[in-house]
Length: 270
Ligand SMILES: [Fe+2]
Ligand SMILES: [Fe+2]
Image 1 (cartoon, rainbow, N blue to C red):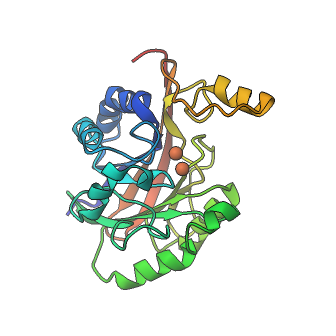
Image 2: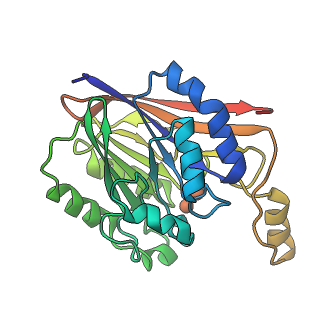
């Protein structure tokens, strides 16, 4: 069994530009960091809402192994069939009210052994609290049921506030290999190994067009804010582009992390 497992976690892939960025830039990072397992946040893959089977296959061909979920995952009916199949590595947050048992936790067979992956949704904002149950209790419940020997346990926390994302990192410190925050599409400068060996970052950021509001055309957002218009969000197209991820080294004998490294790269064209 390999002593170390190198995991790449890629931030929210935002629509077509996000997919193009991943296809263009991921191969370089897979090689540079000798990655064994690639996980990506997929709630926005297909025009901002969920992921179609065709887009999943496109990203799998580019090297993504597992897809975590967020508040937008279940908004696309075509994604539900992927979630329902325990052998398809697509997840939705386990504590989201309308998510079925099994959609929020899946395993992946890596070269080092079985990896457990769990998706959670934050509840700090009241709107989301109505949509999801307590994520701390949900993850406790899930971990307590798991007696198998996993070489790594990766938790994705899709939450609003930096404080809740950091605190759940401490809550799970020493019990899982990594707690990776996302949802806000802006990377935070705080990757670290917590005191008991869990890798953590508050927000890993996104992949897609750079000069935008979280991947959405910024002019629409400004107009809606300033003039109180009701324009719908449009995913921004074109460069420059951004790729955001973290690379985590897991010691498979302990299931804990030894390093976490942030990757932030910009490219004018792809
Ligand atoms: Fe997102
Ligand atoms: Fe989200």
